[in-house]
Length: 143
Image 1 (cartoon, rainbow, N blue to C red):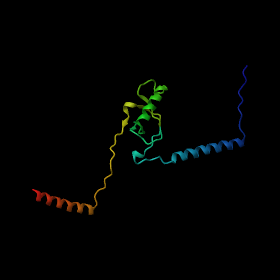
Image 2 (image 1 turned 60 degrees about the vertical axis):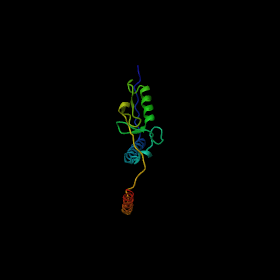
Image 3 (image 1 turned 30 degrees about the vertical axis):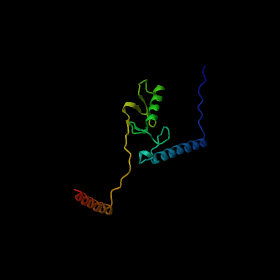
Image 4 (image 1 turned 90 degrees about the vertical axis):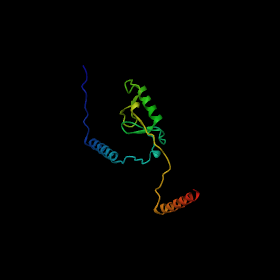
């Protein structure tokens, strides 16, 4: 015959410990929810969450996360190889949120980088007008 299970009911002291643990969990969850998201204003300063280097060949997933192209390729291949995507080729899991990502649906962000040009100030534009007038006069003299 099998022995019945014995359920131990904790004393009042243990209940206080349980309450402290629950309060700690609630406080921790509150802190996590209140933490400001890491905002990067320039893509050139963004850090890849896979390799922790500056993002190269920035690639965005449908869920909005941005990775290095090579890091995302490796991650999709890895999750596919582990059987997490039921054998579908070119389909994997987003490393950040674990949503299904099809490589054919990712967007490679092609950005032109160049020198930032400041608009001319009023003083510079008046100098430019004088230079243009001198150039026009010189051209008239030549022809």
